[in-house]
Amino acid sequence: MPDPSLPQTRTPESAAPAPGPDGGRGVSRRALLGTAGATGLVLGAAGGAAGYAAAPAQATPLTSVGADRSMFHGKHQPGITDGLQARGHLVAFDLAAGTGRKGAAALLRRWSATAERLMAGEAAPQDDTGVARDAGPSSLTITFGFGHGFFTRTGLEKQRPSALAPLPDFSSDHLDKARSDGDLWVQIGANDALVAFHALRAIQKDAGQAARVRWQMNGFNRTPGATARPMTARNLMGQIDGTRNPKPVDADFDQRIFVPSSGEPAWMANGSYAVVRRIRMLLDDWERLSLSAQEQVIGRRKADGAPLSGGGESTAMDLEKTDAGGEYVVPLNAHARITRPDENGGAAMLRRPFSYHDGIDADGTPDAGLLFVCWQADPLRGFVPVQRKLDRGDALSRFIRHESSGLFAVPGGAARGEYVGQRLLES
Image 1 (cartoon, rainbow, N blue to C red):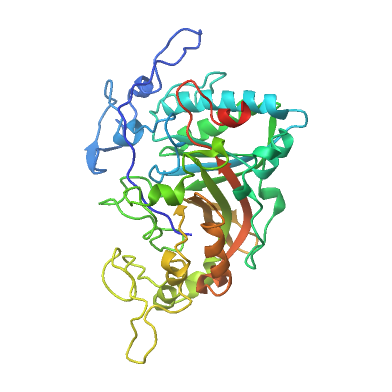
Image 2 (spheres, rainbow, N blue to C red; image 1 turned 90 degrees about the horizontal axis):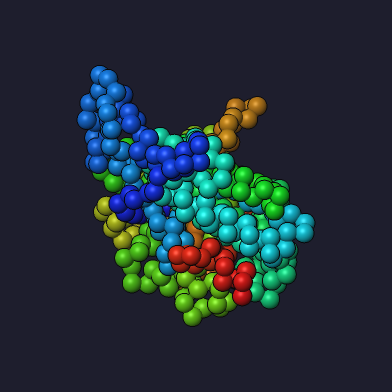
């Protein structure tokens, strides 16, 4: 369930002005920033405090967090290799009866147009709420995927990928079917909470009568610039989470994460498969453990993520190292040992989750954990073998509970003039 802090994609902002209330061309969300960041702590590009402003300044430029922009069009969809964002929403929809292939195509066309505009820092094409009018793009990404049922409802069963077969049952599953699966899946991430919510609301409104929300979940990560230096994220257990994630600079990254351009079916070229799991952390039980016991469960030091066999966070784990008593320094059932690709026939996936907190139960137990999202070229070679091995003896399994699950085919990115999924829906 780990995840990396991949480098943030930054592209100079060139958003066109957004429509004004009278239908004319008004100022863009970015231009409307004005005094944002001028009252209170102002952050520079390195995230350091620049001081307090005594009065609103004129035409204050966006901070680096607001100005960062991800591109909608590209070889792959956004939200896969982009850096972790501070806020996220995951939402699944079911197509309404009678929507069919034509209605689904119209919906994806609307969603793609909205995503392109919002990711550029512009207003939504229709009935913009104004929630994010003061902010820049804030690294917003919007990603679309298709669930197993989508192909039945659109009459495209012959185009359903074999890799989209339902995931097997796992002993750690306590799944709520109402919060699992779905015909369509949308992942939204941004470094500003209002920008993320604005996108969620726009996508929901665009669905209209064509699709209804099946489930929706909210997540968060540490805000970029909150640490003195860029570092791997921590989860709600306090563990550094994502140290061994595949990285785009790896020679075999694309092979592991993306469907090749010659892959099958053809419409999935340059796409990926997302496994989505809501994993509740039993934090009260976890926090009763001593620091040493927690580190034995994970197999890494809590302070810096270094393996118990020694070194720093990036040091290779020595699985054969023993202590004075002849016991393995990294326990056989340690989570970090079990999830290693070389312990799973090379199986690898790109973990890119959000933490979540949905309140406190009547007995005082926090409903909190991980919205686990992992990406791979084939879930039967990525997620499934690793989860099966975790099922057989992961020390962490006593402290987590898988409560919902979904698998989605995420097609490649849309070229300019295209919408996401066009090669499937108009094939």
